[in-house]
Image 1 (cartoon, rainbow, N blue to C red):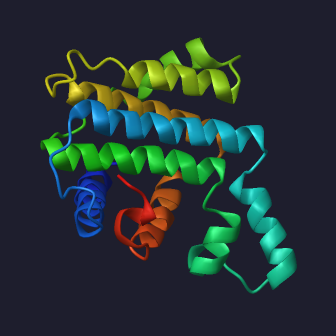
Image 2 (tube, one colour):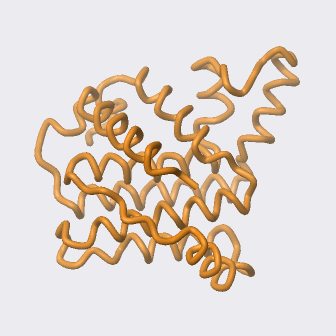
Length: 196
């Protein structure tokens, strides 16, 4: 589970990186920002469909580049080649976009009780595929009423808690993947060479 202290740090970092890379040169709507979050959920599904999981990709990298490589010290090259488009990396992207929204709209995520969400997650999602879980996550994210900020705190808090449950069940160190992706994002060009 992402702690409140980590959340505060991640919000500041995600927003700062986005500002430095030109993503907030103009004012953005909640709908615009949420659609970008949903696009990351779709990328996670595509990674799952292709079987692109970090652990397997990284093991392949270790075989190619030697056992001296450590996951905590991946070079930009290794990250791009073996981690960037992994399921874990895409889930981290979902979180980073949510943290950035918090920075844009000055929102503090209202995390649901971890125990309550774990029970709900286990009950609702225990027999679901990764794809179906991503659909459930998308449903959580699409609860914005009139695309305003009134309920963003609970939507983002619920989504982050849900992703944490997914990651826990998969045995994924979500916090580490968020850190890796943020480190990588700091090295990227303006708007990551995209229109927005």
